[in-house]
Image 1 (cartoon, rainbow, N blue to C red):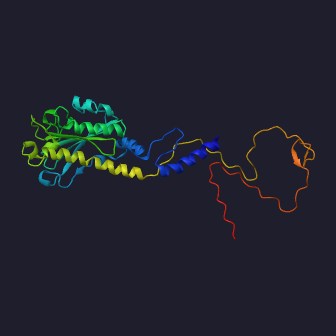
Image 2 (cartoon, one colour):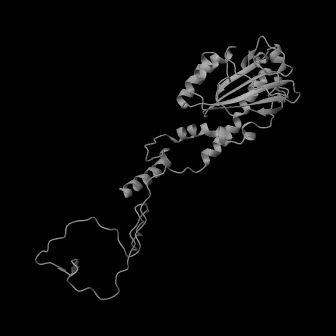
Image 3 (cartoon, helix red, strand yellow):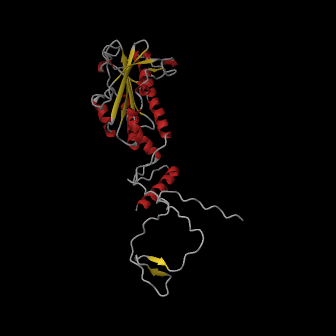
Length: 319
C-alpha cells in the first residue's frame, strides 16, 4: 500500500508541473493560480511592516496637475478585525467577503497639511467572490456614496490627532487585482476642520474640478496611497510565487532493503512436491534445489529498490 501511495504521489507531482495543479493525499485540486491567491491572504503577517507601509511614499506625478508628492508615515495601527473600520453601510457591503485581517496606517504630506489613513482588508472569500464585490462596488456606484466611507486612524501627538469622521474629505475603496485584498484610503485636512461635502477620489481628481477638496489635492492623496501601498504586496506575492513549493505530506516510503536481503515475500502455503521435482526437503523444513550449484563466482547480491526510487533506464545495446 505504501508503494502505491508513493507512486501516485510521484506521478501527481510530475503532472502538476505541467498542468498547474497539485495531486495531494487530501484531494486538493486547486490550480496554481488559486493556490497563489489563497496564499496572498497571509501576506499581512509575512511582509515586513516597512514594506507593507513604507516610511515614505513618493509616487511620480501623483498630485494635482501631475505635481510631485511626498507622504510620510505617521503611525501604523495594530492589526485587527474590521469592526469600527468602516461606516455601517460600507461594512455591510464588504460583509459577503468576510474579514480575515485588517491593517492600517496614517500618513501626512511633507507640509503636514493633509492627513490620510490607508488600509488593507484581507478577506476570507475566494477569487470569484472578490470579483463579484469589485463589480458591485463599481457598477452600483457604492464607492461614490458619502454614507459608505472608511473611517480614520487618528494618532495623538501628530498632525493626525484631530483626524476623525467629521474631517473626512475624500476617499476611495477598491479591490486589488490578483490579490485577496481590498485597499482603501480616506483623507482630510491636518488642521482639524470639519468637511460638510466630501467627494470621492474619482470625482475630486477629475479634470476641470475646482472644488476645495479637488484643489487641495485630497482626492489625489487618497487615490495615490490606495494605489501605492498595494505595490509592496504585489512584489511580495511575485517573490512568493517564484519560491519552490513543497508537495503535501504523504505517508513515508519504506527504505530500500539492505544489500543481499530481499523484501519478505507474502506468506503462502508450502508447495506440494511433484514427481519429478528439482527440489528436495532439507532437515530444516526449507525447500532447496536438489541439483548441484554451478561452479564459479557466486552471483552478486543486489539491493531491493525502494518503491519511491526512479528506475534507471536500460542503456541501448551497441550495434
